[in-house]
Length: 254
Ligand code: DGL
Image (cartoon, rainbow, N blue to C red; front, side, top):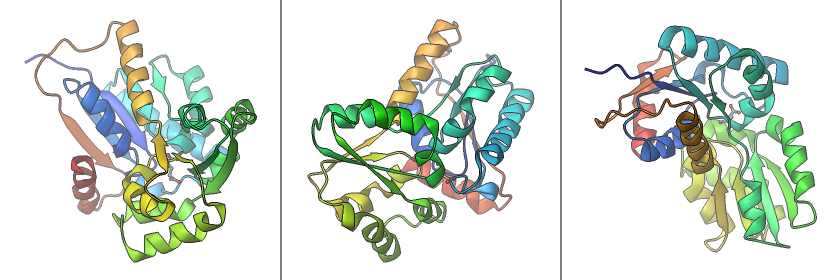
């Protein structure tokens, strides 16, 4: 049996599984460790320093315990709060997630684009920089949606509660041309979001972009696996309740 050095993927909770799905589709022969920090979720209402410290702890664990060859921060909030510092501190490739504003704006020139994300992502420097960059090409509207994270953490994806919440935060911003899902939990709520905003509205997320960037990086450093057998995925969670792992598998298989 050949030893495959795994890729570490982490999130504040289960949302990052939407990213892992895309990565696994693109690179099914790699091995993965997915770590969901559900015991500390949500990150999006914490301070930048707190999110950086939590992200650093997970990064160290993935490197020291699992010897990962690269890390994907499958969380827009942790990327915004921590990726620059973590890249200075560790030498392995660290890939992050950012709201996919660029394709949404390019396909909806002079249109209206709503970016749904956590409060911390929407006040971050990274978000300001991309909103500034595209401000003459489209109207970009922020929609902080912290409670949506909790609905997804509970596996509540299409309930009347989630739809009511979505109406509450989106109705006064509609109609709109495109929605950017700037939080990795939100693709799991995509059906409910689409119902609330209408079927004509395009919905974007950054997960495929991140998967492709990871593949490029691994290729650059000569660390793509040459193994042709199917890769293994291990789901880990900071919440010891075995239900977290069951729900992880369920969301991954969706
Ligand atoms: N999944 C995370 C993101 O992409 C954050 C959710 C949270 O607030 O914990 O931003």
